[in-house]
Length: 364
Image (cartoon, rainbow, N blue to C red; front, side, top):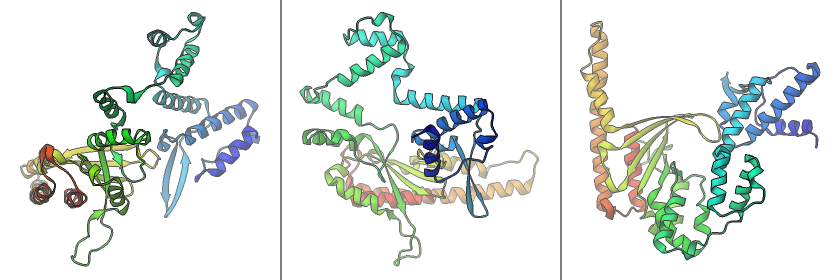
């Protein structure tokens, strides 16, 4: 298949269309080559799930319909920008791309890898040799002492960000063997933070307010992992979707539950597969202090109307926060009675349901 045919297929498969630009027939030979190069790089970036879609396109809502336009144009500047995106993405996937030739040579020497004529090889050839050596390496995990294996599990299974329960699969390491699964599962559930969604989209017949609970996917996940693994969970996040682009998340550490220090994170999410976000992080204590400061606000120009408005808002907000903290302490107390406290805490599905209600109170 020709490159033009490949591009046509790729464009057809997208759910949006790039901005209309001059047809190929109207371009000079040089312009046609620039456009073809731009299209190839643009589509490669679109196909990579690790590159934020928000850097490539912009989504507009006009009269109820959604319009998508590319932010780039087929010129040399855009081509350089796309190349930088792909280079940054490649380096994120392969650290060796950022290494100097000397660093790669030292790594080969440390591993006692002898390659004839390597002194005259370029950095690229040395890097490829190191990557091939990595592919050939074997590691006998089960021959290590158990204490060392546990350290390996913790390093391999610790996630940098939260583990979103919805749509996530268990790490491949837990499927290596039954022994590895038994040894590593406790560490996986103990060291990571798991994010659950709050489901409050329907009205409970027993009360006038919304019935808050975990979404069915998360509940099923807790059932599937079993009570022994649920008991190992120590770090939780509860996500409440305030709008299509804003999520309010409450973070809780079960071994040291404290209502006044519960962390609330407001995330502004862009429409891309990676859900790139801007975060604003505060504890309830910090929010309460801001409200108390508003109660003592003094306008620089001495405007009494503005002062009264801000002070009134601060007073209302402070009273609401104090009630929220009191309600959280009540919920946390019930959780402690059910699941224990400190290092002896052993969460259960019912206990996590109690924390779901507490998280809903925290968000509101």
